[in-house]
Image (cartoon, rainbow, N blue to C red):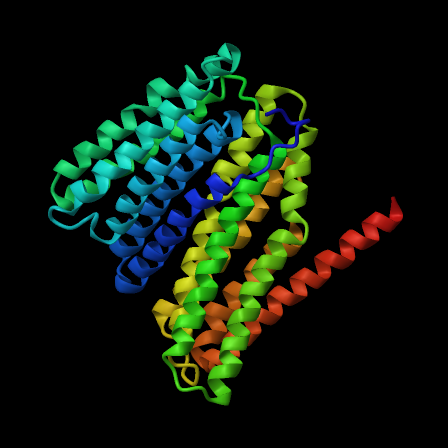
Length: 376
């Protein structure tokens, strides 16, 4: 479907995304269960692998017709296999757990490549763009299987090499002319942001359900929810539409493909990962609102919001060449609150300070955009 046809996200893609809701939940649980540096490393590594599997199907779904019945059947089968690797995420680095994760994961990755290639069989010019990508991309599944066979201590490094190959494959693909439908591509990534935010809301609600409802707990929960609502505002008030519009303004197919890769495939990962990390931090913070947040909670909140804000700054710099000064300032303020203020105040105070920072950021950006609009 062409850009002019206004391709949008279909119900099959939404059903496919449901499995990734579960995958995000698994990642949050992994971070909550292991606060060691190696635990953080494992979560980041697996988050990349989950993100890349989803991204591969997003690129394919953007380019091919998903309404054909054989394609629908294939996508439904892949969705079921994706559920298997998502379920295996927490055990991926255990003895024997590597195979449980790697076999379904590799199956999904190879199926995505096959679906992409086969769906373009009647579009040889577009299929030609894949010829620079596929030869490098098919190496990753082999490396992942090799990692599954390796001892757990070595497995993380083998899989890190697989991540490096993924990056190399994406850079190699830049030599081709990928036709990207801006509306659909931007919408797909916005929906994954919603998945990550939804996991945060579910986590807050689940934590609240296990606590005695007191005014302090309610107030702390309100602050946590305001943080999440501010995240939503920071993305959907203008960033999502601006990113789509920037992609649509790029007429050169090769440059549009580069921009889609950098702004969405690479650029959205810190936004999503930051949301996942913050979700774990907010759940942690609700447990003892009347005490200063411990080091683990402070790290989660600080790193989560730092990644979230940094993703926008880097994305806007790539898309427009301009720095989002307000978001840089907000990131610095949050860092001061988490590092300097947090050990001195109860958790509920910290969350309200962070929420206030994000609300002020939203207000300043809104006023600046309105002023800029009136002056043009």
